[in-house]
Amino acid sequence: MSGGEAEAALAGGVGGPSPEDWANGEAALAAGLVREARALAQTAAALRQAAATALPGEPPGDVRQVRAALHAAGEAALRATLALEAAAALAQPGTDAAARAQRIAEAARRAGAPPAAVAPLLRAAALAFRSDDAAARIAAALAAQELAARLAGEAGAGPA
Image (cartoon, rainbow, N blue to C red; front, side, top):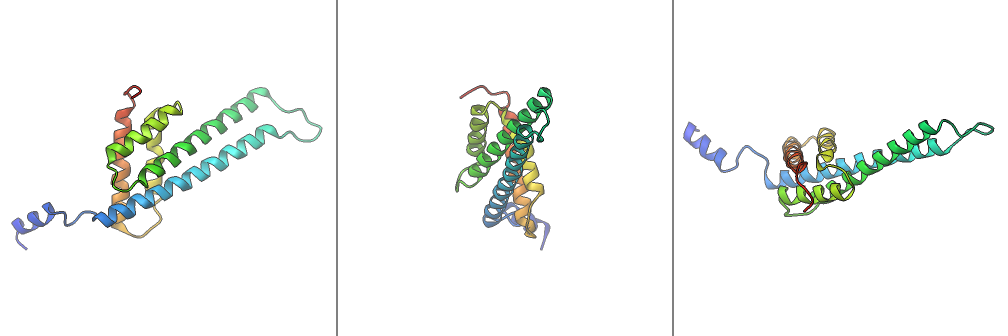
């Protein structure tokens, strides 16, 4: 294949993720976000349980430690909720990245969190990809990167 033919083939989309790869990558990214949400929810529950449990015959514990544990539990629950919202946004067929980012940003604002707080969850889900499909892995990483960038741009935006 000549250089011009190769450039024409690449311009036509050959060499990148196909629409099916994008769909698979986004589905796997959404599944990773659900797994992350489950881990965060379990952490929140364990922290709440630890804060509420006193050993028999022992005082309830240092109020500052209990407050810190309850605060951490609330933060973990909030991040779990945002991860589920991001997973739901990814599950919307035919939705572009801008609309998905807008939905996630609005959910973050409703919860009192900056939209950029979802970016680490997206990146973690992309890194925890559970498939040997390299093209879908690339698509998931690109989708996570684009959403994270859009959410970082939303950080300074006010309420809609």
